[in-house]
Length: 214
Image (cartoon, rainbow, N blue to C red):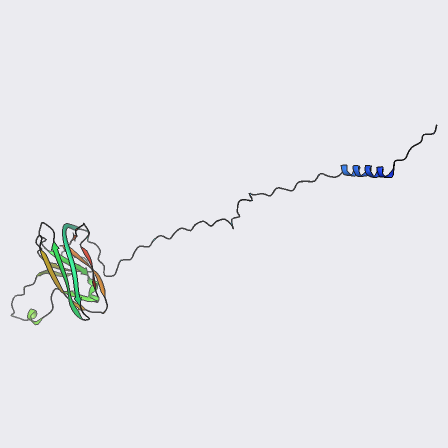
């Protein structure tokens, strides 16, 4: 008996070929995941770190100032200064009142020596009476007038003018003769001492004034 072999339709052969080719196709590889946290900004976009604040510089000392002496005196005084100086000369009047229970043997006014380049202060005005021969003995209220360094510990760069004594509850008015050397306003430190010890104002502050002469 003759075997009859039926041929497969053409479209079935095409389907088989497509299935076979599909089985030979390589599996797709996954793309590598991006590295790094996308939420983290790049260094160039990150907030800049705050720069350190500059440290404050020390305030410079004013001109014609005085350093505080190493020793002090706890006795209390009050003081005022009045200036009456024109374009050439005048007076600077210092009034000191003692609140101490003991007398101050020698009250000393001290100011910078450099003040003499602008304003000369002196306890008297030169006169013929003071220098003439055979005149009356000089009577003067001041006890010393020293350009430092002095023999009693007056520091260099200062002028110390002594008066005294200053009795308890007493007031002493000191009139200084002022002569201008240079024009313009002047400001300088003035200290009140017992010898070389700086006295105190009421409240415990050092007895030092800032004097201004217009």
